[in-house]
Image (cartoon, rainbow over all chains, first blue to last red; front, side, top):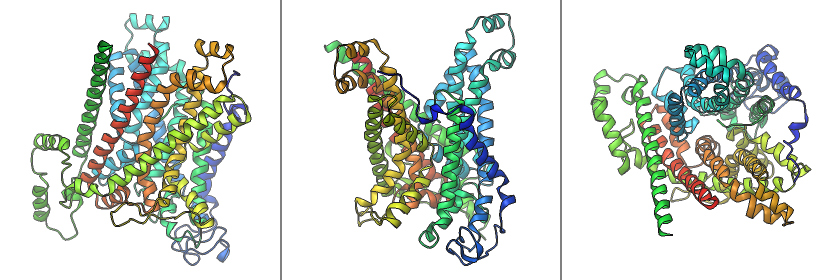
Length: 273
Length: 317
């Protein structure tokens, strides 16, 4: 048998596989500056077809410009996902290495991950945001981070295990160095590529979780422009102006796929949520 | 023979105990989350103009005036008998879930079955021709779809198959028994849920088969000139099964979580609609009940995966 190839993506250099995600992220962040119309005022009739009144993608359920709302609607999703991914990666990097250095802590994290496997992330976020009225976006971020940390710690601990048994770390442990010093000075500098890979994977699942939560009306509230919320709000007019639903769907789809492609370039082996 | 039978039973009993302990830990965690965060169900459902005394009365009705320890014991003790407490509006959570939950489990179960069959088929097909065009197309499309949110796929399916092609219904109508009225109404929701999981699991199957192909007994079978189909079913799949079972088990949670969003799009009569109402009412006991029962369903699938892993380990020994 021949050695397995790793798919189409395997033939493109890693740098090129990060480019689509970077371009899309840039467009999303700069989007509000490019919007041709105000995103919060009606400029045409509700569910106007594409092209009506000079709107490229038609109107939404209140007659607001779909294109302008599309250009506004990705920024919060991207920022929330970036914050979640960064926090999870930072905490997991420290806890994962600590778990590898201190096996008892590692076992606790393993058991917590086993328990959280029984809790689908979407339901966990519903539970936290509903039990915490007034928590707003903070509640969403806290829930998404808390639910993701155990798996991320597991991932880091597995990568750190071979490093902590190397001679120089063992001698540092034997000489009585403090744990935080071991983590930041001796182990983490050797795991830079693992941390980067973890960040990519966490960003992929953060986009999934934040978008799904927004679709379930957790997070952005009307009249905010948000891709997931646009899909939900404009579904009743799917026949009249499909673009009001299709355009944000394509946007979320492209974001998820390009970020996943980039994460694949950062990590040799995929790991899940 | 009898000895190994007893050993197998002991092993299964241990796996069962471990899973039940993890489930109990989840239920305690759910209680702790609801408890630790500010706000309770009596506050959440208060209507405008309602006096403080009215809220207090409902707090007593919901048992929220009791000490934490008493409520914790009541919550944990009620669960084995199916008592999930009462919603913020005073209805038993179990009877609220009795209609929609079976529909959601039907949706999730069908999606899981489709996922297993399609992922095994695609993964094996790709693995039989490593490096070929087929392999690359399957691997690349699997990677492309696995990160997509289910509701985005659902929208695309509705547009293509319901609105443009007119082949399948875009919305689910409930029959007199509360279940979906026709099988055709299940096709699009099941596909929307299954597609990302098929992508994920096809990659796991493909990867597990590739790992297994490095084993010496497989190389020996190849040298013996056995047909590749027989090598796949007799030499590769048995060894790859534990990894595949673990992958499918992680998909169960994704399927049940994603079902909430997909049900909303198709107007499917499952827990999604109930949860949407609970979100609007901030009805925590309903969410806690759904989380508890979802945990039970996932535990069952994980137990099956445990059993497959134990069986595979036994076969190898």
